[in-house]
Length: 319
Image (cartoon, rainbow, N blue to C red; front, side, top):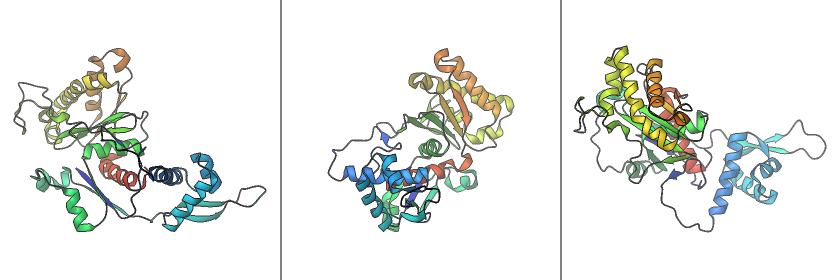
């Protein structure tokens, strides 16, 4: 579980790449267009760096009048600032560049998942029906967002890792095993927000007992504590089990990219290769031959970075 908090104004990002697929839709109301355009201007500066008002109008396809008005609003709020005139401009009045104010808003992200450093105290929090966001909002009086750690890591990989596609499945391996699924740029959470809970898929009916009460769940084979104790052969076997569990998902969704996230001391090349071989053996060539399994490009900070991206998107619409 990851949580992010930030101080600052709330503005929508309805067409955001981080919008949740399956989330309930609401009727558009007056002001939605303005919030969308405001986010579009801010996001363009966030991604492209310093731009003039004319540059912004061209990039966003908004009118110069609308762009200038929105830029003025962002200047007043202290989110952007004027950086002086462009030095390489030819004839005509020099254009004034606008850029983000680096410390205009502060974001705090916390990773409450089972990191090895805190395993002794955080393996089983015993939280059931706890409204964490409401509690933090009451205590801190700032906007609060809470997300599953695998989902946060998937969003971080999408926004910061530069995936080859806009669809990916991130498998998060820790004390348990979970996954975050992004399809066409949208996070998939499922009808009951349980999408990606692959850790309790039974892969070995004759295997070990799982904490959930079943026998031979994926977590009993390839959770990080077990992989740490495993030899090379057992670790490869864990990779194959993962590939076997992922093959139907890869085939059904025609995924091309699977990202492995977890402690660096348990995820190695033999594990990755075994998982990839198993996926390819169990899917038709048109699907399996195009699949790639790679390690997270963000390292062990992927949850924190993904939570920060989530906050930036939900609060400012810039991710």
